[in-house]
Image 1 (tube, helix red, strand yellow):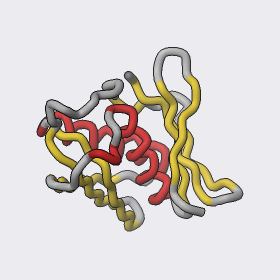
Image 2 (cartoon, one colour; image 1 turned 135 degrees about the vertical axis):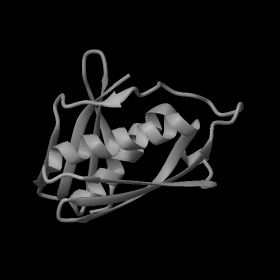
Image 3 (cartoon, rainbow, N blue to C red; image 1 turned 90 degrees about the horizontal axis):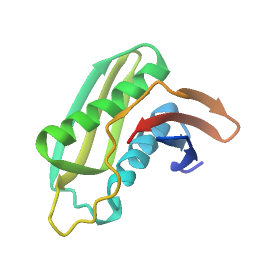
Image 4 (tube, rainbow, N blue to C red; image 1 turned 180 degrees about the vertical axis):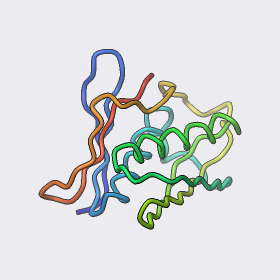
Length: 137
């Protein structure tokens, strides 16, 4: 199974779904889904690199923390990310993101304010892993 992402309907916000062969790959795909709401991530250059880390034993809470840490880094530095990597060693998570500062000519999509606990789910499915939640827009 190749990592991929999709969306699901939610009344006021947007549901994201990351899929991958592992839970970590599904988390990476969920990050791509979230940032693709804000911009065409295929047009974003990898000129800035940031690292994020956290401790969490609960897979579902780890997804929300991962996504919100990425959003915080992006917001603090005025960045848009397009590429992600994540490693997990039991409860220790270490992630990376690549992107660039927002450019005037970039078409902005919908601003994502944060990942929420709404419809939060990280589970093994027939084709691999699925990580989903609703993001506040």
